[in-house]
Length: 289
Image (cartoon, rainbow, N blue to C red):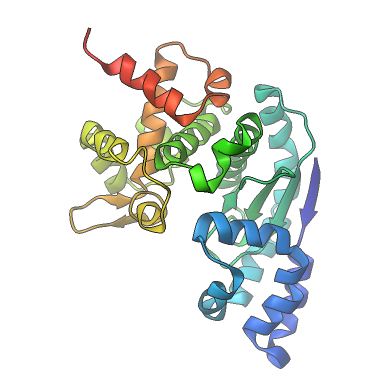
């Protein structure tokens, strides 16, 4: 395991904004140094290339992001993640080589572990600051993604054949892992914390549990699209006109996995199964008779 911290690079980038402007300073002095990671983030989370990020970069508050990232360092963030990772590695019995990039993003991605031929994880220090509880949940969540993508075949994580059902199971399993590895249950306070939901969003999900699961599973064989991700995963606690929060997909995936765990399934075993296999198991569990 290798940890790459890019906060000093970001500080240098910020110092070059006055003569260069935001886009040019970020592109030449930060993005270019960490291109491998950022390109994967843009590909899998934004479904876009770097040029499509120009407006987001121009709107970014670089000085505020730097201040929060420096607080992450001052509060012992690097030392904390070094404490968390061995527990995750031991739980999943994964001790392969991987890299963890602690960088400063554009304020939207706290963590990710995209499919890559060379396993890696990313943490956005500007989204964490001194919140070490958030760090624990994010890091264990992303570590599970890293291990799962290595366990599955390359075809299973190829976006060309990656279904929305697979994505939902992947996110649910990683969320469940972040809870299980810390000895948490699946009660409301634990779910609220692990899903980064507020009370209103979690209340909506629990009140509409069965209908939400069915709605999501209706898209199980659909290709992953920006519209589906925006509607069900990446809009956070923001409610649509019907009151549905924009991260219900995480709740649904976690509900499916927690139902299987309650029946004695082992999370390590589920980690090595495809999303379709997991959904089929859950449907068999819920089918009458």
